Image 1 (tube, rainbow, N blue to C red):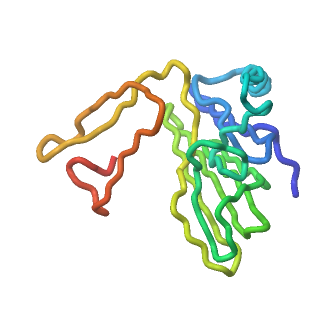
Image 2: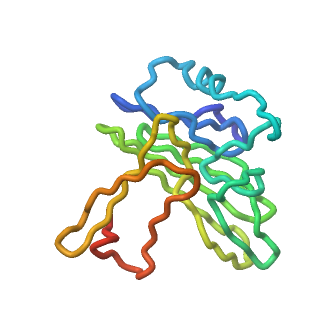
Amino acid sequence: MSQLPPYASLHNATTSIIVDCRNGAPALLYYGSKLENDDSARMLSLLGTRQEAKCSPALEPILTLTPSHGEGFTGSPGIELHGMDAEWSTTFQLIKVEQSPRKLSLISQNDSASLQLTHFISLDENTQVASFETQITNLGISSLSLQWLAAATIPITDNMTKIKAFEGRWSGEFQHQEHDIFMGSYLRENRRGKTSHDTFPG
């Protein structure tokens, strides 16, 4: 296995994305204004170190791009699956990082379950827009049932106070809606299998 870099990054004229690759599974370390210093990733990881909180684990599970119960993450997992051989909770080990100027491919594997998890991160050349995509591949011969796979799990900044959502109706599509940040989940689902005036393809 080739030596993995401690950090992987994407940059354009205004924006930087840094992924922490040191802990076995990739995690988003930074997404914001462009960083100029090559040591910024190391400094950011040191700044993100928290003191031990009372009545909590000494080492807090890292919020990876696809958190799982196998990593000790107690929140909503980024992947839910089960198989014929009692696979229900899994974890992945980063084995390869492929990088081009505007795209990162982070390939992880679980040898015991014969699964491969690949994260694709792209950064637009001219804007601050990034896209995240996750792909699961069954490398084994037994069938696998996948209930849920998040495109990516990313932390939000402390200064984020609102959720902006979109809804609509006939002749009034794409209406903006704002909600205060709260503890819990905000979920929008389309249970009809197609886009519509309230669930547009945006």
